[in-house]
Length: 138
Picture 1 (cartoon, rainbow, N blue to C red):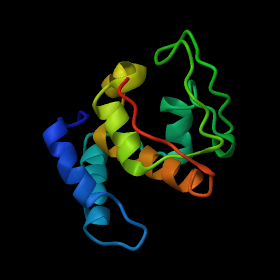
Picture 2 (picture 1 turned 90 degrees about the vertical axis):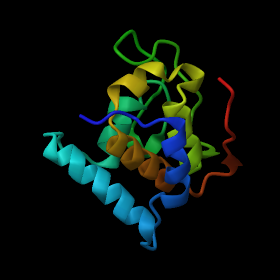
Picture 3 (picture 1 turned 135 degrees about the vertical axis):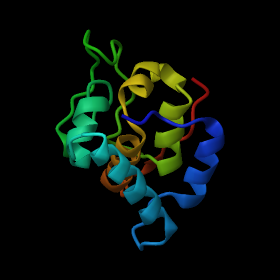
């Protein structure tokens, strides 16, 4: 299992993030997914990953996630709903990688390629939402 990289590595993620039109970002994501597959990690869809790592706290209708928190492994108090927010890729990745806003447990539990995949799913699922999400300082 690969761990989430340091802040220095995230700079490269911003440059090489996955893009719908191909480019270097797609190769970056495929390289990290291939590493996860070599490590025996199951290949899951973005929706499944969202439900596993995000949906316990963050509501998102396309993922059928209620997002009210749980006493389980990740979040207790819930988080903001993504049903009206347009969430950028960088906000997704940096929030978990920098452990802001109560994401320390997610940071420990998720692999780098899964974080990239679920972030890409969130970007796609929230692309037409009216309110832009802004980074938080925690």
